[in-house]
Length: 174
Image 1 (spheres, helix red, strand yellow):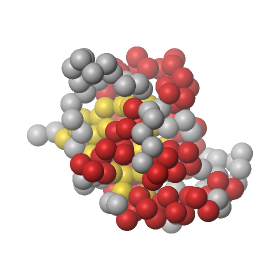
Image 2 (tube, one colour):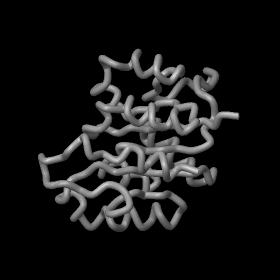
Image 3 (tube, helix red, strand yellow):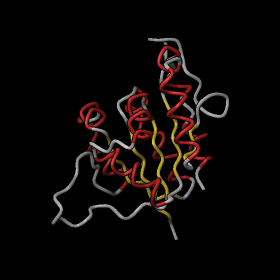
Image 4 (cartoon, helix red, strand yellow):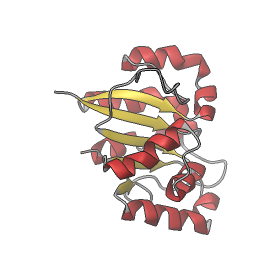
């Protein structure tokens, strides 16, 4: 039986290469559902149908009306990739003002397997809020792949999309 993975993508450059992450997860046996932040959805507006065709599911980015049925199967695990500085900090604070944040804040309480693969620069990584947020998320069961075990922050304006470790995140899933 195939398990369902929610791939939640934030607005960082690797979000423009979601098919790489989706295919890696599918090759590992996951049924992938794609959820985007509003900005990531805007960045991918020209490929939303391609993402839907690749996953076989609608691509979500906003809350549905309470009377509408769920468009996606329930997740067995969630991967947040790329996870931005903003999302990591809001998530740790319990802010759920978007569909993406609502799903991942709730997932902690549901005790779903959660993996976060950040994408941020060294200036953002040096901000003291990030260490607190990452520690809080890790203390609450989230595998945050930051540093030697995942994503290593780059110099501002010098990110290397080819080095984004999608496979590391897929390997960290249960």
